[in-house]
Length: 357
Image 1 (cartoon, rainbow, N blue to C red):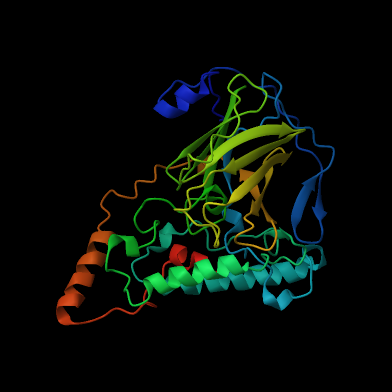
Image 2: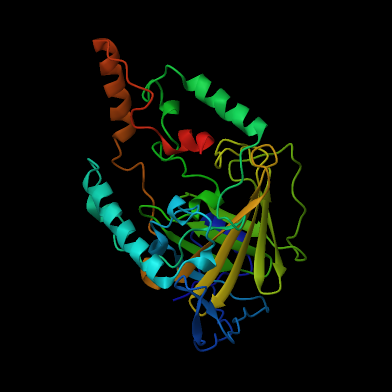
């Protein structure tokens, strides 16, 4: 069942308790004929006409999930060097999926303290070989000299420190603070792969199962429209505005404060996301990331979403009964008293390594 917002969408999201409007959206068309695309197992719509909201915008609302894409690498794997996504046969992808599933099972069987039921799927049926679609070689562009120097400075600042000297030595995910900016959160992960989109005439709201935040984004040309705020004002998730480009919602985000780095990009990160409903239960989501101080050129990756009302967002009660951070730090103090110095390589944090990727 799709949730619909009152026109006062901002109040509804901010309070998280407003009554859902009884508005009935325009009926959606019957499922369209599908055909395989590029021999990758992905599907594109043929003769599909997107449904409309009562005020005439393309209807993107619903509970969305990308857990079937867990295990798909962001970049082209080295074994497919020289190939493009369209070059990968269905059999090659199917064989790769089987190997990915096997590796996933082995990985989590060997992790101490992670219950297997945490894992969304061990048998994800990936629809594509990798996610980066531009550059065509499927690789993130090279790091700039400035980006390399920044990464070296981060590594130097951490040299000699263990992973439990301070709570700041732990990743933001460990600290239940965040997993990353929106473009990071959209990438499939161990669990928490649900999202929700709600719309009003003036705003679009995007909810994330694990990001703790609802992005409430004003739409260009509407009563709530505004330009980006001054670059003097920055925030963890940046400042987002939206516009419609035909049937595609384009979300432009700037003014990141750099506390959630994205693969080496910090405060100069600029992201453009595009949401397009391409079938009754499919959204093509893609993001372009740009930071001339981090990469030689902008790059784009695309991840399919599936509408699934059985995968509604659960409360991410990360702090409830979570003694992990306290125990990590207390164990670090115990080691200090014993003269044991933890290695920089111990339990390396994904977001601390982000600069090195």
